Image (cartoon, rainbow, N blue to C red; front, side):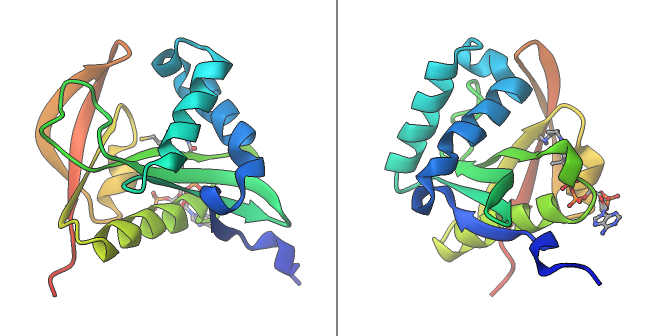
Length: 161
Ligand SMILES: CC(C)(COP(=O)(O)OP(=O)(O)OC[C@H]1O[C@@H](n2cnc3c(N)ncnc32)[C@H](O)[C@@H]1OP(=O)(O)O)[C@@H](O)C(=O)NCCC(=O)NCCS
């Protein structure tokens, strides 16, 4: 029998600020160059994000342990402030991957955006195009560079009413 604690529950980070340090650490270890590899800057970024009503971060937790995150940011790719908002900071701790947690987090972010009247979301990724394509995202055909890497810009439209 699978213990019920195996199932991830999604929370808004704003309601569970104790996980802020964990999320900042994940972001720093995965995309550290964005904050100059500074823990203080990564925490400040997340604190500001939570204070901005137009942005949010969801955390997946199992037995009250944070195991993944995904959020929405007004701007993400510095050179593309013409596009907004962005699905960003999708991360699942390695031991908890391949059990649908990122899929659930991404769906939560999408629904949060659609509920607020956004009709399109954007993301950029250096290497996860196939993951997002199989979840209804499409390449825009545009690329850019981020922290020295070539990234693909993808988009997803809100479901038709
Ligand atoms: C990319 C990443 C977020 C995926 O997280 P994840 O929780 O493993 O994602 P999911 O489990 O939802 O889906 C991953 C695969 O596992 C499969 N899967 C889901 N549940 C499964 C299960 N119970 N058993 C076996 N496989 C399963 C999915 O089908 C999926 O494969 P697919 O894309 O071919 O459909 C994670 O690998 C990660 O954090 N990577 C580092 C950071 C990163 O690259 N983030 C994305 C930035 S753009």
